[in-house]
Length: 256
Image (cartoon, rainbow, N blue to C red; front, top):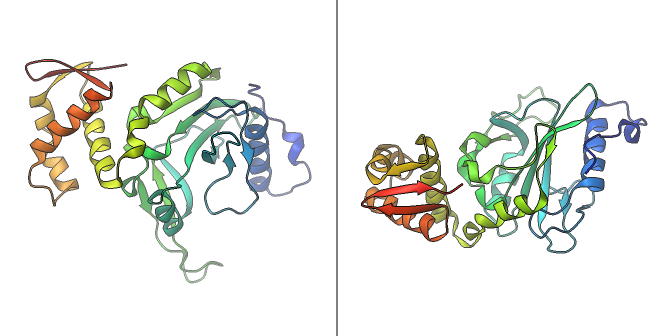
């Protein structure tokens, strides 16, 4: 993987936005492998698709690219709100690449992949409609709230200018792939409980510590009147899938 992007590929454009889009997409097309199956390359879709930019020709996984000439923050601007909600609630929602590059030398500094099953309507923030004086008056965009994605769903491919071994990346992706088969509502519960676990400092935690999140989870899931039962259910599922382990008498440990 060559972490240096080539600005010459976009010399014919005058718009900075067009330039960086072509530069980053060209880099992904030339350097990126598929984090699911390990295929050596991903391919570009035709232009102007609503969400996805790339696909793996082997396993057919789809990817959307978001790039920024600065550190990827907790809130990332995206396209039309309704389009995004429709796509992530469908069967064929995309995975995301979040790319951070250095503006001065066009070097890749960080690249994070978020698997599609970590997306839910809760992490998509609706922006205000464009003003009546705007060219697209009334258009409603959205933001992706990355801080609501559990740590397990933010998988580094490049971190601080260093490549992460492909085998390690694929293992991390498949470690949480059990979420793929969950329905959206059930997946939302799992992600919420996983976020609660990650809020607890250290590797070890207790059931009593998890019960302290009961009020927060009740607000998020007002139709569920058995939140403690749901917490225990989710802990059991995370244990069965190797994300945490049960160490006895209400005690658990996070698996790295």
